[in-house]
Image (cartoon, rainbow, N blue to C red):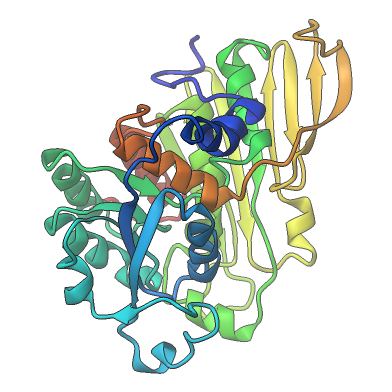
Length: 360
């Protein structure tokens, strides 16, 4: 299909939920349990860190958590609650653990890429949170090493395993919407003074911090754009240097995608949206993270009628527990990777372009 260059099929939400949760457990009841994959986490400073770790604990039949690393002494003192019962060890201890196969990298953003590189150099598969640094060449170098060592890298974009997004990817792939001519995505929230100061260290602003999630989804549908044009504004330049209101236009031969992201929108979570328009229909998800969306079809498909209709899918497993189920299946050779390194590189290039960074 012309609007889906190099895109792979990703199963629907119902199938994905079964494959990543119910299916494997049922299968294990009839055969020997596979050996657990030894995994550890480095860093607890990322905004996703505690949520990622809590969902990693939910897949204990797949993974054995050998320890958590936190190099910040002050933060290390606060780990007793969220990381209760888990060994707090050094990075050297973790990476030298016999049989260790994977590491979850959840440091502060500035340390994500250097930490990931040390893990890959030690021969580890990694789950790497977003965004993957401010340097295109450094990320490209990391991916080259991942490929050379035949390892697996999984990025932590939060909508990959959401049932509504997976439904969208499937119907686009199967042609329900026809050729896609437009995507409109919004990813915003409102942050306080402390968060503004922390985020102001990154020139990429809101698009770099949270817009990256919907850029990943946009490229899952349309592939890499021919050109990315950023527009950024500072609402309070007298207060800080944070670029807190941004738009990016992704230009394709027969489609346009607009990505909006701000850090000043009251009730911004409620207006987060992902809208895909094709000549035969529209997929409209709002707010993001929900499993309820609108679908418009010119032609009926699989029991869905023509015109607009509200659809609610069954809730799937948690987004990170689903990601870890997927990671386990890939490491065991039970499935292929739905997000190859070429996709990860194209996404990061687009994120940097949409955030106003020059490519180094």
